[in-house]
Every structure is written in structure tokens, then in C-alpha cells.
Image (tube, rainbow, N blue to C red; front, side):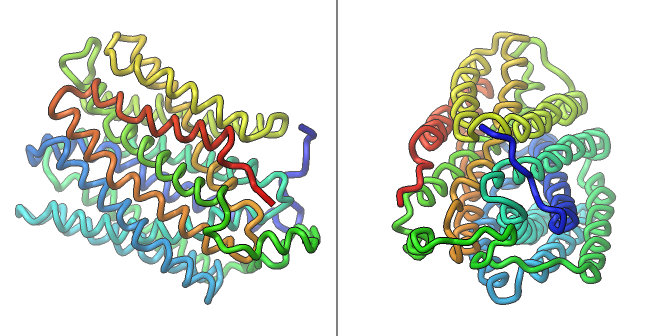
Amino acid sequence: MAHQKLTTKENLLPFILITALFFLWGMAHGMLDVLNKHFQDVLHITKMKSGLIQMSVYTAYFLMALPAGMFMKRFGYKKGIIFGLSLFAIGAYIIVPASLIPSEWAFWIFLTGLFILGCGLATLETAANPYTTKLGPPETAERRINLSQSFNGLAWIVGPIIGGLFILGNKGMTSLAMPYFVIGSIVLVIALIYLRVNLPEITEEQPVHGVAVDAREAAFSAKPLDHQPHFILGVIAQFCYVAAQTGVFSFFVNYMTDPKLTPHFSNTTAALLLGMGGMGLFMVGRVTGSFLMSYFKPTRILAFYAAMCILLLPIVSLGMGWISIISLFLIFFFMSIMFPTIFALGIKDLGDKTKKASSWIVMAIVGGAIFPMFMGHIADVYSMSVGFFVPIPLFAFILFYAVKGHIVYK
């Protein structure tokens, strides 16, 4: 596969600005993955109930994605980004008083804040993911979005470390106040910066890289979305990926602190291992994945990585000491390129339907709302290690999509 230009000179600054957004929502998601264990310990709730944390955020994705897409279709990407950042900040600020109220209702107020924060994240993802794919030649769209998502991976390292040091290392709900106040303030400042930045609007009808669309391509992109198999299967594949990713990320700390397994670690150590170990490999996977896509087809890399996850999950579930722990870390690496690659494949060649299609693929993130509760239920009934058998069928569908389901029929 020949090496091709990643972006153009005139699109470099917009590409950098949009890539910065990937860091923001990655940090927010990274902090979520230590909250399950925190609330289990502080409020004495089950693993299944702690799954409501992820459910509140990912349900917001499901409910907000289409409205966000319609908002941007009418007002453009820039206003959509500012709107998303504003919701992000409001949700973070709601969490602050929720963490300071000594009441049984604090958990539900906290979930409300997370829901609004999730609406902001959904809006940002609906805008930034397709925007990134349009900032250069279509042949390098998968590489571009994977490079941007590498900064998302960097933030996934920072999030668990913040959670481990400032939340899990303390007792009670009050430890949540300062981290979320700081995040809300940073996001608000960035929203104000975007108000002053000249961010060019991109229309799918006239690609910014200047490649003309021939009559055959125009006829294909005019077909309705429900007649585009690669898009429909892409939505399902994204649902499966986010469900699997959220399950693995959310219960990593539970797995690493399980007293039935040897070795096992403290909550704070497990959170640091999640940030520096698991998420570190996740970021390395995205950076190297973007590089590998210069020489290998993205679909082949996606297929190989999905197959590796299928092989490694049973080893994790068997609880074989360090062999299982190393396997769990490797799963983070092999999951790394899945979200951006599936996203780029799902919206490929959709022309003026790109924004709407992006909304549907972002809606598929609702898989993260459903799956952690099911995986938590399995862990409550059997054990945490047995719960890691559950994502295997999800990666099997991703393997199918990488091999055949992604094909664009014209």
C-alpha cells in the first residue's frame, strides 16, 4: 500500500484544533473507569448497579447523537463543537455539588451530571470524527482519524491516574468535587477559545481535498442509508466494539483487585496500572496503528486485532496469574484502532449523508450503556474473571465486519 499524504497544508491547523477535542473526551471517559470501584466501596452497591455510571453516559450518546447531527446540519461543525463543550462543562459542574451533598440522592444527582456531560461528549464526537476524515484525501481517512484518536488514547492514560490519585485514594463522595470542577473550568475556557477561532466549515458535497466526485460516485452516495450495507453493519460493529471496550475498561480495576486471583492489587495501584499500563498500550496501539495503515490495509489490521482479542479473552477468564494479567494488557493494545477504523469505514463514500450517518454511528455507542451491567451481573453471580468471557462474541462480529461487512457495494 503506497504512502499517501495525511492532510493538506491549508487543513493542518483545523486538524490540530479538532484533534485537541479528542483529548478532552478521552480524559472524561478515562475517569469513568475508576468510578465503578469507588462507588462499590463508598455506597456498598453491586457491580451491576455500578454499571449505571456507564449507562448514564452512553444512554446520553444514544439520545443525543441524532439531535447533535441535526444541529450541525443546520448550524455547522463549529457551533456544534461549542454547544458540545458547553454541555460538557455544565455536566461537570453539576457533579461538584452532588459530591458535597451528604444524601442518598447524591448518587442520582451525580448520574444526572454524567448524563448531561455525556450529551456534550456525544455532540463533540458527532462533530469531530467525521470532520477529521474530511481534512484530506479519502484514501488516508482511516489514518487521520486514528492519529487524532491517539490523543484520545493519551487522555485515557491521564483519566485513570487522576481518578486513582484523587478519587480512589480518598474515602467518600467529596473526593469527586475538585477533579470535576477543574475539568469543567478547562472545558469552559476551551469553548470560549473556539468562539474566537476561525474554523472552516466543511461540506460533504464539495470535499476539501479538491477531488471531484464523478457521476457514478454521486449516484451511489444518493442511495438512502438503509440501502448501504457497509454503513448498517458499521453501526452494529461500533455497538459491539463500544460494548466490549466499556466492559473491559470498567471492570479492569475489579479484576486487578479481586482477592480470589493471584496476584491482586490495591484500588489505587490498580487504577495507576489501568492508566499507565492498559491505557498506555491503548495509546501506543493507536499511534502504531496509524503508522501501519501507511503500508497495510486498515481492514486487514482490524481483522487481525479482533482475532487477537478473541484469543486472549479466554486466557484472562481462566485467571492464570501473570499470564492472564499480561493478556488483559494486550487486549487494550489490540482494541486501540477499532473505534476510529470502524467509524471511517462506516461513513465511507456517503457524500451529503455523512453527518446523518455519523450520528447513527455515534448512537451505537449506547452499547456501552447496556453491556457493563450485564457483565457486572455475570461477575456478581459467578466471578469477575468469568465475566471476561462475555465480550468474545462482540469481537467475533467485528472480525466479520473487517473481513467482509465493510465492503462498499456500488
